[in-house]
Amino acid sequence: MKAVVQRVLRANLKVDGQLISEIDKGYVVFLGVKKGDTKEDADYFIKKIPPLRICEDENGKINKSIIDTCGEILLVSQFTLYADSSHGNRPSFIEAESPDKANELYLYVAEGLKKQGVPVKLGVFGADMKIEQVNDGPFTVILEKTK
Image 1 (spheres, rainbow, N blue to C red):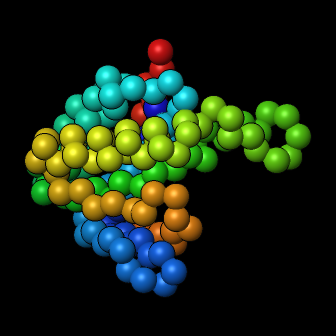
Image 2: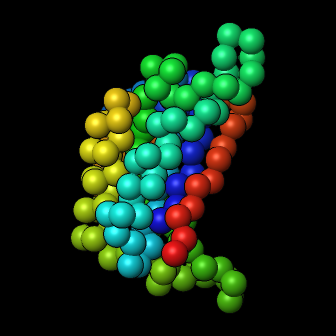
Image 3: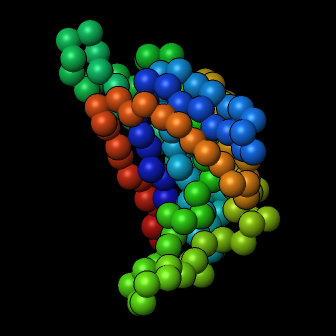
């Protein structure tokens, strides 16, 4: 499992021109699920993301978490995080989990983050989503749980 965490001032997600989700200050988290990933793998992200100290404190130091700053998360399923472009020019996605299993773990992560006290907004699994975001910093962290 892999997550790209981007600190944002605001973000919104639309499908077919319709606003689905919108957040103010917080994170956009792109979550990729790899074949064979389990709920135990997902638990790593549920525990890691909320206390991750990538927000500025009152002195401008990177010292606060999303919990400390009362931020929100826009969680977006992103199977393309497992694109393999090492051969040829067209990426292969054979490492990405099947849609049913990936969606199950995506929703599991969303619920787990909510239980950690972070407001979570979702994308639409499998849809053609349009995301507008104003990155803060920019500050981007890649988290990966490997076996």
